[in-house]
Image: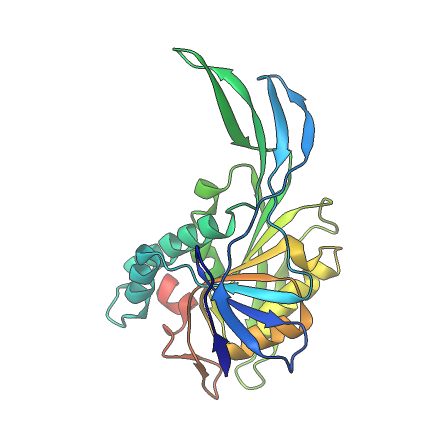
Length: 271
């Protein structure tokens, strides 16, 4: 059972998973507070400021943003009558919204002054010098991450192909374009539409950990998540943040989320 409670000024529904797997899972509303540090001046008379959300040290946070457009696109994805082209577009739009929510108070910014046609104005830009990476898990991750570059400027994309054995439900790597090492402090979005049994997403994050990436440098983006996957993630990766369109309670014996939305890869690419 999950203990439900709320605090004032909510931003999005959040489930907190304590690092202790036997502890009670608590769902509440989480309001992050930005922190900052300074960088040298830039040519546009700016100084860089790193606005960073404080990371939880021993808990995994699962965010389910309550935006009506997120609910709309999840509903389009669920409908078995949705044509493949519309399904793929809905997946891309949902990914855009979830990445927007996940990047809130997480991206480094440059603050300063510029000259407008009328007067001098104080401005704030995303700092392109700080590394941000998108890692879509093939195939369906490509659709969910399709509009990532419209949200995040100056990102690098690294493709990761993981298949799942239909009998054992264990993942296998068939494509790995990850770098040997990520830059220090890199912010990484791992995009996997369906968090069902958790095998695929756990394998993907294990590969990142082998390359020196910390749990609090990773945010997971998914269309639908289920308790088995979330439980595995919370046990292995304290401090991880997961953003999902919806949480469904059931995973069947074939590893599909119920009611879910079917095979996201097949429905995205008409296969």
